[in-house]
Length: 268
Image (cartoon, rainbow, N blue to C red; front, side, top):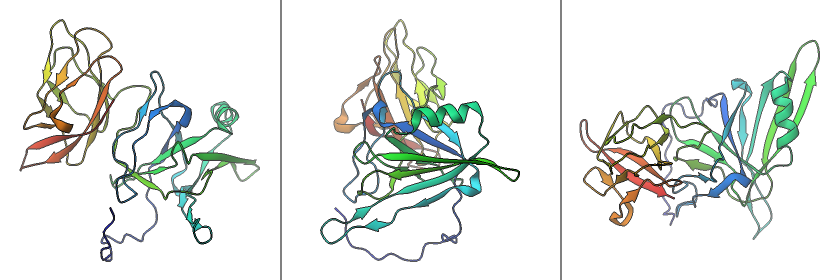
């Protein structure tokens, strides 16, 4: 639960303008298999988003200086809540953006905004409080652009913080069959590969503190596994088997000068 605490002035000129990355992730609510709950303090999502088989999130380019977020509270006594909103411009009116508009207007969406400083991602919406899109195209001698607004459809929770990996169409890397080490290339999903004999993943390289990564179960062959150890901290100490359709998400925690432990955040 939330414990009342002092809120000091944040450092590093935190009041400066938003420095969001130009690629915004969108997820169709209909594609979600499971969505993590918020923790007891009501902001941080406790786990990772899991999508239905064959479904994935996708990115849309936003002109960086046009990205703007807001989350005003509204309502009268006993029915107050937040209405998060995300606005940005997409240049041009090419076929790809027209098809996006034609097929995504009216959809329930979730948006994830990443930041240039590598900080935690902001997540807008949820399956029960989705974002809905409005688009205004305008073209003349001075500009040719689509103004896109994503606004939470119902009053509810504030913008969430998301630490999980994002499921895209392609995994970040494929892990060689029989491998016992995961060589990380960054945050994201890693596709495990089955082998003729069982392999136990025992180590991870390339980690940085706080990094989140997801292992995807092998689609065929003998599935690799992860056992509880001094390196892998698994919920209730329960081993995970990477069979087809399964996945597990870890967060890397620095435990020494060059040592890490990998804490399970969620599994499916």
